[in-house]
Amino acid sequence: MREGLKQRLVGGFVLAALAVIFLPGLFKEQQGHRVDGESRIPPAPPAQTVEFSDPDATWDGEPAPQPETMFLPDDDASSDSFSLPQQPQVATESSVVAAQFSSSSLASSSSSSAASSAIAAVPAIPLDDKGIPQAWMVQLVSLSNREAAVKLRDDLQRDGYKAFIRDVKTDKGTFIRVFVGPNLNREESAKIKTELDQRLKTNAQIRRFEP
Image 1 (spheres, rainbow, N blue to C red):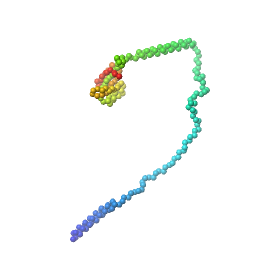
Image 2 (cartoon, one colour):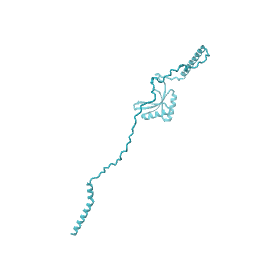
Image 3 (cartoon, rainbow, N blue to C red):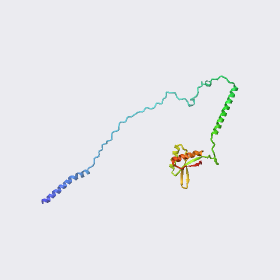
Image 4 (cartoon, rainbow, N blue to C red):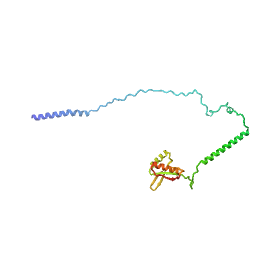
């Protein structure tokens, strides 16, 4: 009898302890949450009102003249004030005419001789049957990559070479050829070929220039 009472007392103590632990949490969840409705936004700063006065349209100066009356010469100005002082008459009219004729003849003869010497200094350009100048150019490489061809052309132009590119369609596709020239002297093209072969490690070709 005592043992059963003891167990009941222990069971009641455990239930009381559980109630003390869990019941406050259950009641707390059922309570409504309190919301702080007080605003924490600071008040707006005071605005200062600035008043602007109306612009003053009055003008104390003189009005501008009409465009057609501006930059006109004065009526008092005379052409006599700009006349050159007269030189004393030394030579006769016949001597003046003879001097002018001789000076004009000398000037025309000197200009004609200068033009003739300038024309003679221009080298004669050989032409083919179609009337095209016989010039030569150096074909460096033939590339399928356009960017590489354009970069090589730009590098050669920066170094002072007259480089250009052309697109050529073949059975294997379109290739971009890089040329240097043209030159009227084939020996000059051969010299450029040797320089670029040593520099770029290529085997360039000398070809006739075709526009």
